Image (cartoon, rainbow, N blue to C red; front, side, top):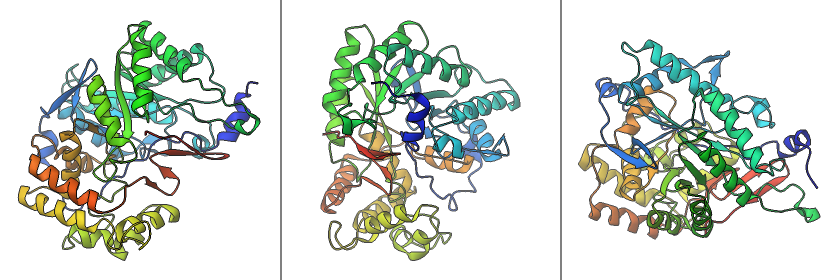
Length: 423
């Protein structure tokens, strides 16, 4: 039985909603202007691509009355001036209600293309090939997509929206878990079909590199082997990973990917803000711990009440699943390291992920936020500092798995939550 596309869209509603990335406050660092023109030389290989060791998530990007937000325009221009940038988007990314209802796919892809094109026109000398941003996008597994051709068609549409001849990194957003008719026994997996679709896109030159998302050690190994038989390398696997998000199969996945030569892209690098030491507090006198656990910080956070409730449990503890004190003991350690290095807690969180061999993908909506994130480049934590933070994180007695409907192991779809397991 095949599902009508329109009917499936309504069933899915919020299906496959893109990964959310916390965008930290920049009140402490808004004044850094010279850094915006500093060329980034801390680079890494991602398949055939050379990209900064830190990417930029576009989940929170939006337009204002049909025009790009000026802050976003400045952000992209800054990235170009710094030597490029690595932006992660997806066909399901978008801010309008129609996108949330399963319509209007490709909104953010179009926005990214427009911002890069306009940055090229506004910079004194046009963007060279070496400094042009790298853009990755994603294919969304859906009930009406059951053939190789459906992958090729989706890829071609994304390619056109991004205004490129070949997409630099084309990823599958998640395993094929969206099964609205599972209760009727209709739950056939099309993962291998999607892999064959990606391989065909690669051989046709529609994409330069291919990747997956939310694949655990077993599935990423199967995919790697399946693609290898078709002469196609697997470049990346995007998973939730952070200092307090290493459990539930995440660390094992990273280790397996490192063995396979598959680069891990880490979303939720700040654990939805818990590892920045602040939410929206405007008081620079607050320590990281105080800012996080203060009522001011969490009550002013621009998150749903369900997200705030979960984040409050992580921040303060609930005496049940999360011990009293929550994440505060780890933040104290991170703050000491940050102070000794004249950097921020957020930058320590990002640098940790780099040291583990992954590329963190934090969100940013302004040039100042982007520059602040890039402040985690060109230096590395010591092995002693890494062990110290990991010990504190392990002693917390809990692992971060998301907040509200935004989970690291599930997606909210129109008919409920669909889960996957990295382990």
